Image (cartoon, rainbow, N blue to C red; front, side, top):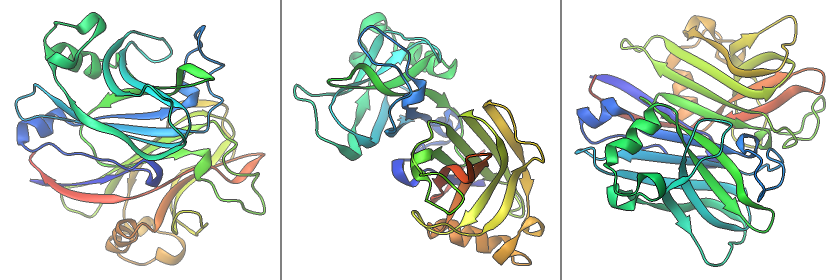
Length: 313
């Protein structure tokens, strides 16, 4: 047995674990949705202009024949449909499963948009009449995405996220809207960059591994874990990335590594690793990515929220 800790952005929280060791090895599928991932179509305005965000999470059933899903949205108005489509990142593709449908576009949504179950009978378009395993193959190969469509301006999709399959550790979904105004940072929420920080603890509980990915962000010079709740700035306690020279545009992996209690800074220096875990459980920790010249106080940020499970290896 090993301890698994799942953390996601406070704005779009939803993490599912499988009910059996077999399903656990399959891992849940997750799609982080942003406007910057949309692709231009004749029925949508230019992608990347929406500051709305979303998170779609999926859990595979014990028999591998169904996906339970939950789709959460923040700051999005006019939703009339949401689907799973098949194709790779940066390319539009056909609808294969409906996640939401409404005859009347919705008002602003901040929370759960829809939840339910997908089976082979739910599949449409090119997967209609095909076995459920074909959808799972598309997801595992990176050829499936979730798209949320709005009216009147984004019928082709306002926010979109490629589906990612795998074991879940902790993670933070980062957006500009998570930032808080500081004296040396421009107004939060103006960045279309996104990021995802994933953390997992070793079997002995003394080391945390991490991987930090960012997209459409330029000038990164530092990234950290800070302590404080949402909407409030706090001190640095762990460095995740540091560079004397700001980076160029980053689309992918920014940093990966490990840290222990010996790496703690600021108010946690000299304290045990358990204190950071306590802060995370209480919602008092976040990941922040800092850029120059315009966002030294932070360009994208994601609150960390923990759920502890026991899963078999």
